[in-house]
Image 1 (cartoon, helix red, strand yellow):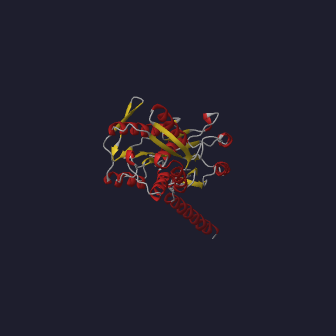
Image 2 (cartoon, one colour):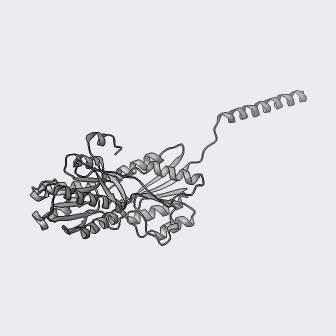
Image 3 (cartoon, one colour):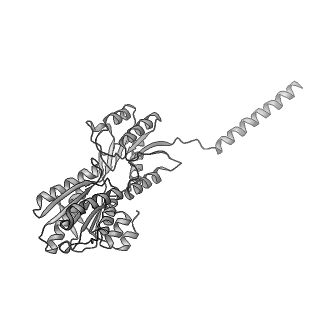
Length: 349
């Protein structure tokens, strides 16, 4: 009897072990997700929201990444808090789109001490030790500005316009890389072109509401003398257009007969629609579609590859005016695309 019981128990145990092994074959091993913390400037513009959507869409892949997103609401102190929170959460990587260039040394040093690579995108950081961040990817903002100014110069030449170009400049958030680069390009162009006069510069903070306020103030101060507005993003241009129309002025390229010419940056869908109808004379692209490129950089680091310290994204330029089809800057030609509705329809943002 004892022998029979032993045989029964042994058979049950063997059966149980066999079932357990078979069950294990059907169960895939759990894959550890790559945790990424993303500190974004905020949602101050159409461009910014398109950028956020691009990054979140690329990293919100539940099978590979775990994205922790933080909206800084245009405050650098919130971004620094976010970086420290990411460190406490022991993320694998930190993505940072910085509000301004300066003020990052301490937070990035803490990330480095914790062994967390930081990838900076869009705007730059100015730090004492560039090894505090792993890589930067973004736009050449000064080149964007140079391309816009060269287009203006060639356009006026093609039109035979030799009178004064009285410019008001609605800048972006002061200290932001886009503001620094685009402002530097315009200021240099004003020095190089004797008929160009820079009447005033004020920050529009990259927002439509502030762009309108600044434009209203400039119209009051300069009246009919003002004939060109250099806006550092599309949302500022929208606000400027509202103010110009409310004041009874017209937008366009006939500045010798009282129209106000508008130059803008970003090339968002709405911005290009204004460009298509001639309200904005020239729109220089600043691509917000960083998401896929950032996943490529993270994946490369996962494979143990060394990244380039900086990567520039390629960008276009759009106008309906055929007088200038390209610009030539620092030994290189840049196409100016003739804008059509088909071009707008094919764009991702």
